[in-house]
Length: 334
Image (cartoon, rainbow, N blue to C red):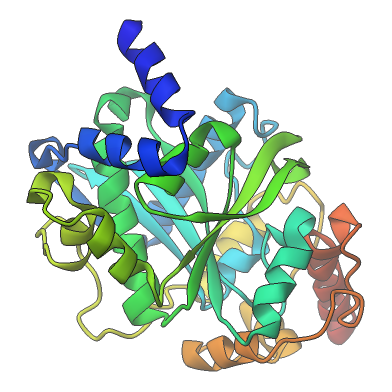
């Protein structure tokens, strides 16, 4: 109890004081990652396990209502710039997060942070949203280490495979200190209610991938490897972290996966998205070339209103594009 109070007091101190103190307390016990594999979810079974874990944890935490499908999934997941990462313990998925690249559908964060994201788009930056983080309750004692392994694979993939310029995240204020003091995310918008998680408060944060390594080097300078995230993220190559050797984005979605998740499973909105080919055709994407999607994301510019999106409408970005796509797909097949 006393330790928790001290930690709370430290987190509330100004950044120049709290940051070094929190980073000094970091201790990566790699023995806690033994028996784990951290990788991209590639199969239907891995994806289903990840989406079920997110659903169950979000329901338990009060961020979501229980769905008949037992999964929490978004249409953007079927796009080539979206990747789901898992940490599996002897084959059981116990921790997951999803990286969603900017696309014609926008990002979930656009629901409440569209002005801030459009400011980045006008700069020609391609960014990816970190979301759908969940860990199994039985493994919470290992969560700090497991989360950092998952962050490592996510960061490496975003930087070297997707060539992303920034990471963005909508995070509950109670977790903001982790991203701010350890990973050096910067706040780009103040707290707002986020209907995507049943009105829970969220802060928008950003990590500039062009400059973060230099900032990490300064922040962690002189720290031993087990207390040094710069060393862990950019130098260490743990065998448990498995990424494609090609250095290119891995697009795992095909028609069979699309049919399973968006046609056979219950869709709470009752939409009919047709086929994966219909979705790509409607959005002007090429399934075999994720880099094409990245370039498309880079050139999106203008204000939300100019692109047909109202920054004051919660539904405008998060739900309406999917419904518009659904209506176009339905019309194309009639």
